[in-house]
View 1 (cartoon, helix red, strand yellow):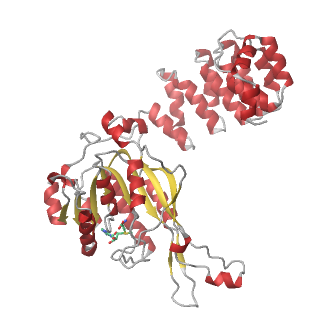
View 2 (cartoon, protein in one colour):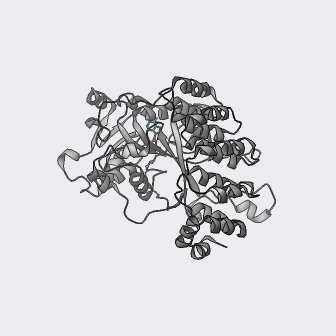
View 3 (cartoon, rainbow, N blue to C red):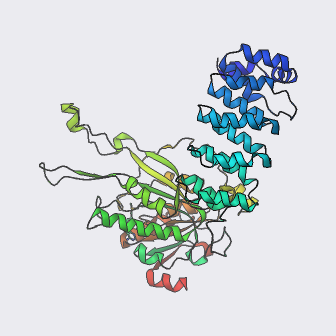
Amino acid sequence: MNRATLSKQVNKEMIDELKNNTQALLSFLQNQNDGTIVYVLEKLGHLENGYSKEPLLNLLNNQNENIRALAVKNLAKMSDISLLPVFVKYASKDESTKVRREAVSAVGRLRNEKAIPTLINFLTDSDPKVVMQAIRGLLVFADRPDIKQELKKLLNHSNELIKEVINKEVNGFSYKSNNSQKHDEFPSFLRNTVVQGDVQEVLKFVPDESIHLTFTSPPYYNARDYSIYQSYAEYLNFLESVFKEVHRVTKEGRFFVLNTSPIIIPRISRAHASKRYPIPYDIHPLLVKMGWEFIDDIVWVKPEASVKNRNAGFLQHRKPLGYKPNAVSEMLMVYRKKTDKLIDWNIHQYNWDKVKRSKILDKYETTNIWRIDPTFDRIHSAVFPIELCNRVVKFYSFVGDLVFDPFAGSGTLGRAAVNLDRNFFLIEKEAKYISRIKEELYKGNNLFNSKNNQPNFVDIKTFISLSK
Ligand SMILES: C[S@@+](CC[C@H](N)C(=O)[O-])C[C@H]1O[C@@H](n2cnc3c(N)ncnc32)[C@H](O)[C@@H]1O
């Protein structure tokens, strides 16, 4: 029976009636199928200390682990210390790790000093989620030096989530901001500025924590003509050093969206194979190591007719191993500068008016597949479609923010920023693309509505003097 049918058959009034009549609940739970029992257990709601435990205790020997886990969960609502031995029994002996986790959580929810030795015992459990529940229970008593001492023992635990929680809660570790500027502000010399120069040089003069959002598509190794690297390792080193700087200049807890895709370097002759480089997968570990937290992967899908056809051979011969799919996707990898602050903290840095004006009220893509036609440009061979920039800017920044593209190309991100009431900061090394940016930004010519909001095109020397 599906949940919609169940909700009609077992409605709220019926559940309330069962709750008020222990005998009725007892016999109901004995005579129903598993799906109905699970449904009722999920809907039982608040249970007072003193509520009859029998119907739930009866279910602890049920064959179905979901029923046992839910029975424990409901018993835990009663905050009844007499249940401690029951919880300990199921936490230690149940064959299902789900039930064990729920039982350790129940021990913690008792919030009673008598539960402390049990919780300490579970700190050495082999299931990290059980350990996590024991930690949660003990954090209630974290002011006690003996408890703190026990928790500190987990600082070198092999599980990364456990280490993080202990670091934060017990060791007082937090990813600190060293910027006194308000979160929604940024250095004014960066406002709507386009610098012509090498990104590594220019970034040296950008102050710590000045950027709200970076969205970029870096050069594609040697796949296009604008970037020549001696080796793939040198290319990755270059990107690593640029993205470390992007990390430094990004504000606490803010986002970095990176657009890349695997590339192919064609073979030199029919006697050789072409080589494919999985750029997104090779960059990812470097980003995590330097302090970016992985948030999401969005797949940008283009129409098949717009990409290079690799099927000609296979279409003819149809032999295994020779299959070459047409690459219609690119990755948008979404990262957040690692912090112990929640997203809510970031949102609270803005006044209500700004939050309201930044809301995404129109229809939006609900999946991580973004179908967007590519844009072809007569000057630049790899420009962002404006729609791609619009989405990223809307989803990951607020009105008035500073959005940054270190490899600006034709400056599509700048245009999106202005259209959406944000500010931009762009770096691009090639003069011909700088001219393109000028053309693009002035195209609509009323993009800039006031004098003090005009774009500022500078070379590196001028930029350095502005930064002082
Ligand atoms: C993939 S394109 C970006 C296109 C851009 N997203 C757009 O919408 O037009 C990469 C850009 O990075 C620039 N670039 C490459 N190496 C650079 C460097 N060391 N410093 C600054 N820009 C660089 C290239 O000239 C190229 O325009």
